[in-house]
Image (cartoon, rainbow, N blue to C red; front, side, top):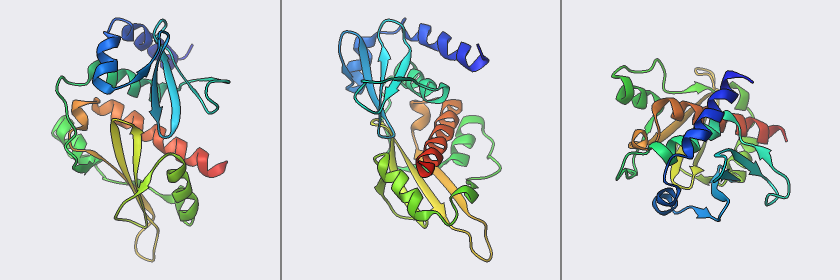
Length: 202
């Protein structure tokens, strides 16, 4: 078992110690006797109320797959650790600004390489729309994506030109750190980019 798997299993066990009924009320989750349900980037997930483990399905749970480390951490952190009374600001800041809020230091960059998406703007747009995204302003491709129903993220992509390489920027609600730890935001960003790449290759 890898360290990631050990951590995921430990968090699943820790999840069981929390008040699930309070989670259901606070985040307006669909639930039954066995599962809590969440939608993450257009994909349906569920968390077992008995083991704490998360899984996902693309066919209404006729077939299921274990949730990965990154999305599992997002679920556990939101449901177990969001600050009481936390509300979204409706204003978005890029990840370097979040790093400054988290540590007092400005991250070295506010965007990541967009090389994998350069020249594939139509495919990137289609992948965003497949994950429930809606177009927004800025960049050559820009979408508001539902990481979770409760957590939006803005993706903006700029194609390369004669002066600048392609770049991709993720922006989060100004109050995101009231809902997720900064490290979890980084996991969420990696998961989002992995899902985009996979969707564009399918």
